[in-house]
Image 1 (cartoon, each protein chain N blue to C red):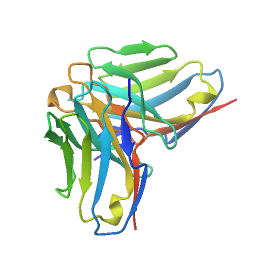
Image 2: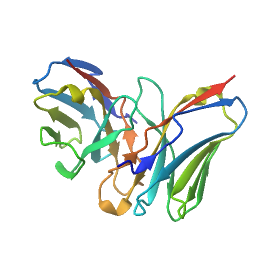
Image 3: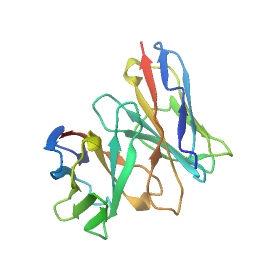
Image 4: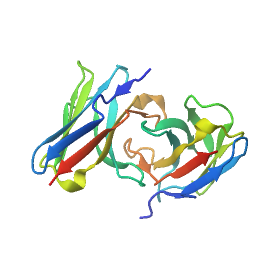
Length: 113
Length: 114
């Protein structure tokens, strides 16, 4: 069984740029969520995708957007990067009807200079 | 507004003894809770969960207790092992929300001393 994989592992961008982060869900999982973890904080919910549509969003501005593909892989896009976007971005997959557990990838560490 | 709080940023325990990690929440609508363990440079790993219809759930060395009236849960690790040294997060959600929007605490760093 393949776990959740994320790419890239590390990324450095400058303020104002755009970034795309990628995630492959665990085999058999149909829901993907994205979380942002700032230094010293717990993960914060960005949004969730199910059946290729966003069906839940946290307190993040519209410049954070996403996609889910038919194979349940996902992208997180962030436009107009700000210094405060520097964080670890975690993707989590889950399977509806199979409990409420999230399975996380190792994350992408984004640094905005 | 921190809806899930882990008030102890760190905890040191001797190997073989019990580790108790605490978590408080403020939203009475939360009805499902998870504990995760996180090592550096890795994503959080699921440990154990509990639904609000229970007050205890066990899985090997890990037991989670839920006190709904106090809005408090705790994770007990017995016996503690050096490999348990990690950051532990509790997370809570309202399962009827239709999403996996979990609210996480800020974590407790556990150090198990050999």
